[in-house]
Image (cartoon, rainbow, N blue to C red; front, side, top):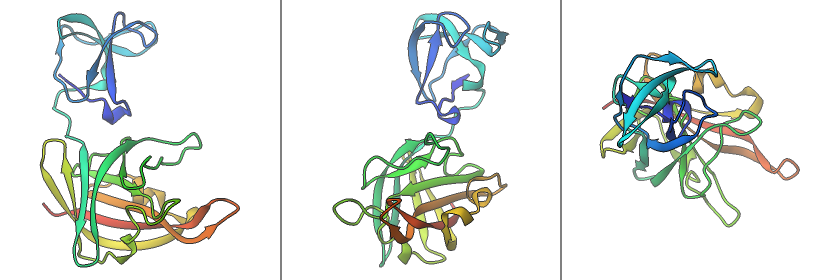
Length: 221
């Protein structure tokens, strides 16, 4: 079995002393690490299914939803868009949701952020990566994203060093309340990567832009 923590929004997975989320953590297992399960799943006191498991010489329990029979897809580490109009080569942060339920944003102006609660770029589904338009001191990583064109290539480098290429299929600007969240984040039988940044006019009272620019891409290799 393999630890599949990012799928569930975790950076690491706890090996617990007993089958409960309230139990003592014996150690943290990194995402994608192989572990040996010693028996089938059992129901813990908290109502969840747990696997008795062995890792790094310790015996304990791992939440069943954080294990997969297949090695999880390696997460993205860099986003690259290079042509005569754009020169993006950015590190990828991993983000989840803000307290109000929106996708979080990268901490650094020069980084982009992958929505880790969705698919890994290159897998089936709508993977999403966001980046800032500008910063408190000037342009940020997606300052020139508006110059991207249909047919341009967007590349992702994963943790194993593999390069996954996507072709731009659609570019659209939406007011926040009109953004088609299902098309951006929802299920699809394609392997897509959608890029998001700010657009429109700056609202000094709300301290945000009133639109989002969304670049839809589809995997080509």
